[in-house]
Length: 256
Length: 239
Image (tube, rainbow over all chains, first blue to last red; front, top):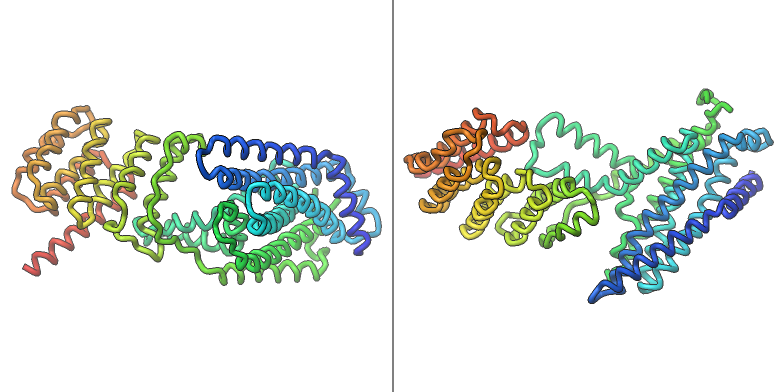
């Protein structure tokens, strides 16, 4: 099973290289670098700090969006070309296919996080950049699993990308939404208010708290808080397993 | 694409899925609920910065309003109004009005929330804010100045200031939608009545004329009135 998985992962990686994924990624990284340099030129003081923060603030959503869209479009193409059916006709468990795909996409994401970290190191000290890069890597893996799950469930680009983006934005902002919803000025005893805040609390339980991940403030001379890393690792491990399990569950139920 | 029965899914995957789901919920329960920290209110960004970030000035204004509201009413932390930097509060309210000039929310916050602080200079600052911005749209903003007049009379015991606000309403709020009694605010201010009675009349007038229609706003103002009544009953009991 492992051999099958690794073969699929290798071909997924090769597909990424041949589909010019890294050319587009390179362009995005260059754009981020140019934008950060330009912003630094405009600043009268703290230009390095501004460059580092803006670079981090741009790279985080840009890399996430790029990889997510690539995964969803790649999977949709494979479904449409009947490539999946061809692979499933071979003697291999469906779980290997999902796992192989995920590993392949995660490797693409790892390269993306690595280059983003290299760019960050141009403007910020190594220690915070390392923490930021590791966190970005974990976030990218989570989004890779999420995109794979959405692509398998919907098999079409628009609904899958919408769900992935919606889930990601909600996971990034759920804490803020909860805080806004519990303001005591509001009529906290009304039925509708209680239902909404209750629902928000339930949603917050199921979602990964991505607002704790990859903060650009880490690159802006704030003390590096390595003690956050175990919590990020544990959160990522749990959510990654959940999303992979959900993707496998859905894929096993598909009737090709 | 049709779906196969879930019996086709290997049990190991179902167990993995259920286990990770339970772990996810357990982890969510374990994480401490985020609480806003009692931070100093920062200066608001410029209008240009808001437009640059959002491109939607009205939406940015509304989000900023919610931010400001949540700032002093943070869950778990109640920052008393007297600890807030009122110059910054004014700057935020002003910025929100610049982004969304048709919005009434900042004026409600100034006259009904921030003017409740037991500190005369801060109260005056908020009343001055309502007065200053009243002239930009008097036909829409007069209710907040009317309330400011009541606060000036009963809290600050500054009759000239209260009459100044009443006169401003009479002279500037002359639109068709402004009820006739609003232009007679001067008589209303000169009447010998306590704060609760004045506020009750003002709120009754606003409701009867259909100036206030939002159920949340009605609820909020009614609650404030009830609080005022409770306060006046306890004060008379002490006397």
